[in-house]
Structure formats: structure tokens, C-alpha cells
Image 1 (cartoon, each protein chain N blue to C red):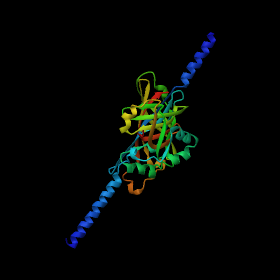
Image 2: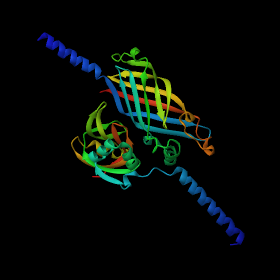
Image 3: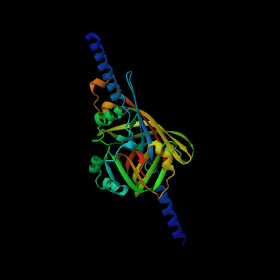
Image 4: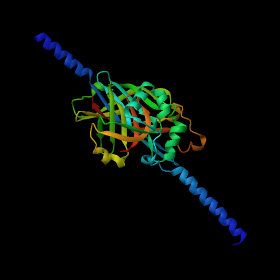
Length: 143
Length: 181
């Protein structure tokens, strides 16, 4: 192969690689949340109490992090597309206050089989505290 | 005895009236921005919303990190560069439905409503007035509204490199199914 050809294919390869990298950077998918390791593991009550007693510090600690919690289910709310496990610990102006865990759709069916009073171990992305509930999203059942 | 029964009835029905709150914790708000170069859509279905029919108070509480974008990169930029959701984790609206008296909660139908109050996004509060509708059906209130917000009104800085990709005004769609508490 002549030197010119080598340069041509070398440059072409670098350009193609660059285009692939930029494309991946722009279009990279959301993580597979159920595969992520939890940053924190604690009981549902401990997580709620921490947010309730110090919302700002807890937000800095937990928001955007994967949190694994274990607790007793108070309620399961299900619509066509969204299944939410609720851990309720107190009553406020707007009803139950606690932790609301929106499940990943692939766990909707297995979550629907659970019942109030069951103990469950799940992990999800902590999105914050809205002054009534701690919100976990992209949740998956661990056990 | 009759007097006691009367007092009990008054207390009971008085309490019933005071307890007339409608709420949801799974309300939906979506964002939509379209320019010739980019269409941006995001949805949040973890919206807290409450309506007190006695006082006409109407409140929303939205966690910004709960907005879900199709592209992960857009979601990262939204949270880290524009909304700064670690610094300003939520958006709030506190106001009133100014014409709630014209809504007959006992009669099914679609009623136009006007909502007025203070909207806080990105740490900046602005007084807004928007129109929408309440659909009364099966004892629930389905509140809907579509309006636009100017990005610059809320101190959201868009780098010049991407100004042609983000519309100056973002379309907001609200859809909340309020159930009696």
C-alpha cells in the first residue's frame, strides 16, 4: 500500500471514529437502572426520617443517587403505565406522607403481584423530597 | 338531646366542608420546545397538585429531576446547565382558581377556569395568569392547561452555541387528575 493510501485510510478511520464518538455522546442511552449498584442501602423509614429532619442536607446526599431501601408496603398504586409502591409513615395535610417508588415498566407486572403488608427490597434513583414524600424513580425489585 | 344531635351534625358537616380537598401525587407536566434544528420534549408524572375548593387555593410542587427526556444527554444538560436542579430542586406554583364558583362540582362537564398565582422556577418567582379547564367526571376533577413560559423570565441562561436549538418560549402542558381527599 502506498504512503498516500495509508494516510487516506488512516485519516478516514480517524474521521469515522470521531463521528461514531460524537454520535454516541449525543445519543447515548439512559443507564440500565436495574443494573446500577446502590450508593446507599437503608430502611425506607430511615430514608424518610432523614429527609424529614433535614431536607437540604439529605437532598445533597441522596438526590440523583441510587438508593436501595427495605420496608413494608403501605399501598400499591397502579395505572395502565405506572406502578408505584408507597411506604407511608405519617399523615399530613395532603394524606399519606412517606416514600413513593415509581417502578421501571419491566417490573410493573411483578410489582402488581405484591400486596400491602409485604416486605420488599427495592432500589431506585432518588429524585428528591417534595415536602410530603421522598420520590424514587426507575425502581426495580431487588428481592 | 336534640340540641346535642344538632351540634354533632353541624360539627360533622362543618368538618366535611373543611376537608374538601382534591389532590394528586401523579400529575403530569410536559415541556415542549421546537426550533428548525431541534425538538425537545420532556415529561414529569410525579407532580403534586392540590385544590382546596373552600378557599380556591391551587398549588403545584414539581421536582425538576423527575423530568424525563428521550435523550439522556438532554436530561443531563437540563438538570446541570439550565435548571441547575441541585441548586433549585423544585418548581412551585401557589395561587387560586379565580372563577371556581362557576364550576359545579356536582355536575359532570367541562368548565373553563382561570388560574392566577406565583410560579417559582429556578429560584425566580413571577406572577402569572393562565386559562385551562376542569372536567368533572365520576367525582374527580381533571385539570388541563397549556401555556408558554419564556426561558429568560426565569433566569435560565442558554449558551449562544445552542440558542438556535432551544426555543425562547417553552410550551407547558399540565394534566392533573384530582381525587377527593
